[in-house]
Length: 344
Ligand code: FES
Image (cartoon, rainbow, N blue to C red):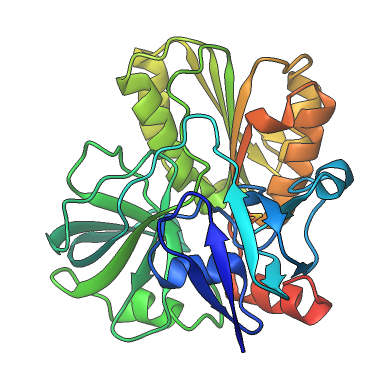
């Protein structure tokens, strides 16, 4: 069975198969339905249910409050229609819609940034022209392996696409990237996705929190903000486990030297040796360093637990939830755990 979902912003109605979410049906047709995490955690796909019935699978209170739900809002990534429906996605402040491109790219560079992070640089061979907003991500498909999502780390005006790949033990893609991928190889790239992008008209202070390779979209956001002349204070924190996990430190120190409004602080959560660096979790650092975040913008990217706890800490420190732009990186193991718990 299939239901018809009318999305006010789209010319043609969507056919949604049994068990499919509204967002899945839209993305299957390459329609630009706003979204981020695709797992009920970011709120980017928040929509008004104008008519019809949907069933919602579990989601976080941050993404959709009880008040919003009772006011008729749903999350398109969690909503499975039970009847024909009519919906309207909420227009986000400064929403930019770039055409989704199916590209073939060639590996220009591939090198180790740490013991388990590879930097991959790609040139676009076909499928462009490609545009995106700093902070968005792409789906990369290597040699017929399952596609994986990675964020662009370069500025949108730079022609070479940069990605930071963490090698995960037991992953399907990791062994290929670690030992078989070579300069000159080609791969499929579908992009851009995500709504946790830089808001360039914001004039207030900015805090950017990156966990591990969450530094990729944050790098794109920070470099784009600085290149665009944003002069407000920008506090960048990189959370990693231990000293060997820090990367791009020299790069950000150089940016700080030329842009006095930027501050860069690496934070170690599990140092194995005495250290002069800041230690703890990013949520603790937020509570220690930031005290009145009303009027700030926050950009967060990294493991779901880091994003969730830091986001809560920021809101406790006065940040308005609508000023929080987050991209949680779900590994395949995270997604499997969510599915097993009934939350995905
Ligand atoms: S909550 Fe639906 S895409 Fe994030």
